[in-house]
Length: 464
Image (cartoon, rainbow, N blue to C red; front, side, top):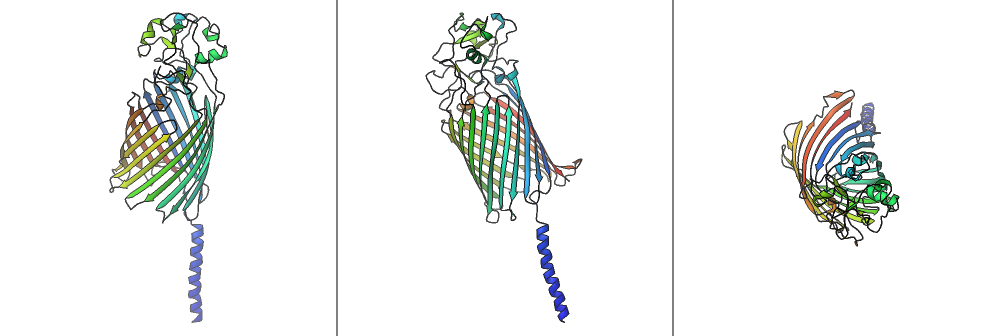
């Protein structure tokens, strides 16, 4: 009998030990296998308020952005993610840093227009970036912390960033609280409008370099040598732009159908916050031009193709900015077919901008694999304290801009998306199975006249 009891006890304790070992060995991994996302988008816009040409002019722009995101499990608890992408664009506005066609040194051939894209080197460029993120999850999966570093560059700008954060779940994972912080240390390699750069390089000599043999016209079309930038022209001394941000988030599952999230960001920017490419024209100083004098009265019309106004200065803004966005999300599961995703954000800063954003997306599940999601987004903002349209800034002001991104406007965006999901990854390319495809289209319009279209597509693959 005692052998039977001993045998039963041995089996009992052996089972406990086996369960403990099994728990240690088979702890569920945060990420089961390597995931790769291929993302790309194409953006195209048109408008009549180009900031490089002082608030009027052609805003046509195209942008193509391919991106790859690779997430790799290092072990059961740790994941490293690499996000790398480029953005190659063409811009009618940026091309007019040097708008002048001067195939020969006669005044008749030195022409330009804010409504005609130049063929200069600044017409197109490529921006590239890479971000590496490392995250660690606790054994109970209630705590996740991460650190990240990033680098980005384009022809006149470089950026280095780093940051991190932590998420903590409570209440059987029904409540999540998060905090994160990021620092971006950016540096300008400033590029200036050609007339201002030349004026500085020649110490104001209007008979040398680009100006040699070129006739400058006053607003009556008469030759003049009186043009000069307001207060001469000051180059950028402080070429840095540093951004510091802290983010706080709270998420709560209300019931089996509803979840609410709240976030607050605090963003501080310091350094050169203006764009050295953007011209400003003042309403209280005389105007001067290069090109066809007969087109001066028609300067602000898109029919003007052969006269360009010389800048009074570049955009100048304060070297400090404090921004606070406060957002709210509410997602609601109606039934197995319909869901609602709502979003609202209020934003304000110490430059005088206040904005409201509201959006609604309605995912409609057509089958186990296909979901469509129409969406709508509304945005409205007040203008910055330093904004004025073309020729309406005052030369005695300390700060000024004619960038319509800082103007008062409202915008509507309508979108539609299609998502395909295959949890079994039936389709394969080598060792990678296709998990999902997302295709999205959006149409965007501002009441200032800017309009844009964007189409994006993403593929997610899992490694076998």
